[in-house]
Length: 354
Length: 198
Image (tube, rainbow over all chains, first blue to last red; front, side, top):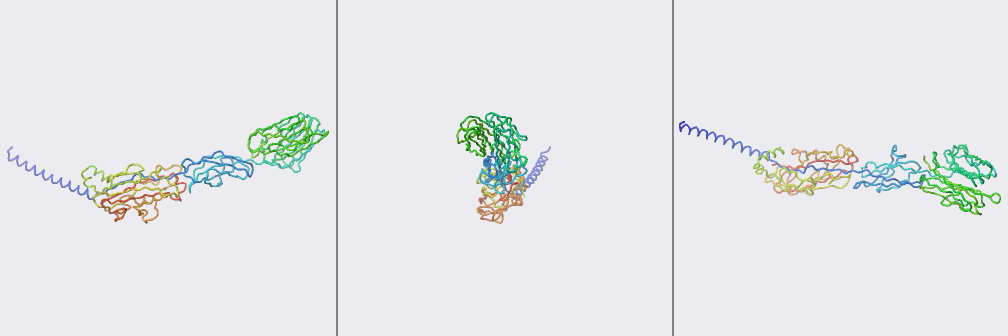
C-alpha cells in the first residue's frame, strides 16, 4: 500500500474520531447540566415513627370477704391492677346470682383498690371489677361468687310440759310460716324412748336419765301449728317449740353435739360448723333443783321451765347466731341448787339461701 | 418532581452527586428513640425515629408527648421549595392490639401539633391541634407539602432556605379526651420527610 494512501486513511479516521468525541462530549455535558439543575432536590426522613395508645389491663379480684347476714351484710372486695396500669379508677360490678350472672349492674366507681359493698339482701352475688381511665374501661376482672346468708330470726316459741305421760303436745300461738324452720326439743325426766313425730326429722335423740331429743322440720304452714311427741314409757315430759326464719329449706341441719353429767352446770356439747352463718340451738333437761338462768358464749335463753320439791326438773332452750365457721359450745348458768342428772344437746342449722 | 430514584441514579456517579448535591441538610432529634441522627449533611438520609409506641403510650386527655427535630439546611443553593410531609402512613399500624384496638381510624384521635421555633405551623391556623390523620392525609408527598419558612426558626420566607438556615421543630402529640375504648392499644405510624428542592 502506498504511503500517501495510508496517510489519507489515517487522517480520515482521526477526523471521524474527532467528530465522534465531540458528539459524545456534547451528550455528556448536556446530560450533566440537565441532571444537576432540572432535577435537583433533597430530603431527610425521620422514619417509622409510631404513636401508640396505652391500654387498660384487667384487674385481678381477690376472694371477697362477706360479713354479717341479711340486709346489713357487707362484702369486702379487694383487687389489684396490672403493674404499670394507667387506670386511675375502678368500676365495681355486681350480678344478682352466682357467676356468671345474666347481667351486671354498676355498684360504684372508686379511686381505690378496695371497697366494701352492702348488697342489701341475702342471696348469691357475682362480682367483677373493671379498670377505668376517662372514657376507657378495661376488660373485666375474674368473677367471684359471694353468698350473703340470710339472718336467722326467731319468729315465735311455745312450750308445754306433762307429768307421768307418754305424750305431750304444744301449740304455737300463730300459724307457722311455710318454709320456716321448726325445732322441737323434747325432754323426758326418766329413761325413755322419744318417738319421732311424723313428718319431722331427728337432729339428735338420746335415751337415758334424763332423755332428750331435738327434732326439726321445714314448716308446711298452718298444719304445723301444733306438735305432739310420744314416748315409750310414761315420764315427766317437756316440749319446747321454736320457729325460725332464714334457714335453708333443703338439708338445713349441719352438726349436732351433746353432753351429760351430774350436778355442775349443764353443757351443750359442741359442734364444728361448716358454714359461716348458722343458727345454733341448745336444749337441756335435768332432774335437779336448779334452774337455768342463762347460757354462756352469747347464747340467748329462749325458754326455761322448772319445778321443785317432789317435781323437780329443769328444761331450757337457747340459741345463737354465729357468723364464722368454728367450734361452738355453751354452758348453762343455774340457780336454786344443783341440776342433778342433766343432758345437754346442740344442733346447728345452716342459714339460707339454699 | 424527582424522587429517590433520581438519587439512586446519582449514586452511580459520585462526581455528579458531590459536585451537584448542594441541597443538603442535617436532621437532629431532641431525643433519639431509635436509629441515629443525621448530624452530617445528607440529601436523602434516614435519620432518627422520634416516636415509638413505648415512648408515647398515650392515654385520653393526658399531656402532650413531645420530641424535637432540628433541621439545618447545609446546601449551597437557596431553596425554592422546602417542606414536610408524611410517608408510609398507617392510621392503624400492624402493632395495634388485635383485640383492644377496634377503631377504624385511630389516628383521627391523635392530636398533632408542629411548631417551628415557637410558632405553630400545624395546624396551619396557627393555634391548637390538628390530627395525625389530618396531617398525613393532607401532606402526602413532594407535591403536597407543609411548606416551611427559612431563616432561623421560620423567621424567613416560605420555602426559602439559605445556607445554615435552621429551625427547631417540636412535634407534640396527645390522645384526644374523647377517645373511647376502641382506641385502646392502637398504634399509628408515619415517616416524617423533610424535603427541599431548588
